[in-house]
Length: 302
Image (cartoon, rainbow, N blue to C red; front, side):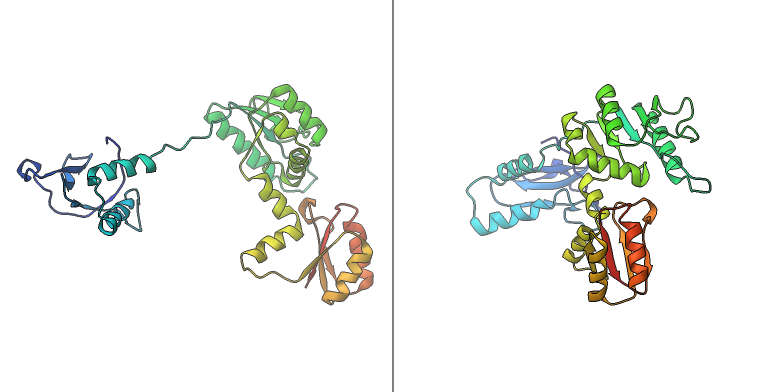
């Protein structure tokens, strides 16, 4: 067929094709040294190979040969074996469509940093820009913080010093029309912004592909209740917890779980509003602060 396959080789000899009986012909050839790797009978259901088509530790490109063999034995097909193999090859060798690489990518930047706060997202964003430039991809950065490495002159192709909120990001998307967007280099702020833009249909409206972590995975991990459900679905254990949206619900949940409890805010920056509570008064204060930053709170049994 002219197609190439990867297999695990393990033989110390090769058949001399020039001395094959007339009823046999060559089936596979080693692309490196042109030696024989398999023969097939012209009319009878006989064929053999000199490699491991099923090799568990390596390529499994030709594992289907076992299916062909069993099919011939069980059903005694009248179709010539070589024709069966050729038809199987056609079915299994449809070239996968490669995703097109965007020519321009929007990066949600690291945003503002407090004194003493770590700048890991500034660093990772800078590395992302460098990597994209090496691939000759145009980079557009949104970052309101002028005191970052990634906003340095000459790094990104274009920088917008705008707040990391959906309204401004949509304006940049409308003006620049990027083919893709990277959300994971903007920390919690970038993730929250990306989720809002996805839910409002902005990315779909402007045909922007979300690169890296899928948006649904971000939503599932940021929403504490959904994350717990996903973990339970695969049989992993998690601490008993209840999702709440008000202080009264938090107190009720703690009574069911029993003190001490841990409160965790969803979609919060660096765990803002999260903490431990040993009694009603501590939980009331903690829940009041947490719900000021997030619309959902998870009460876990500590």
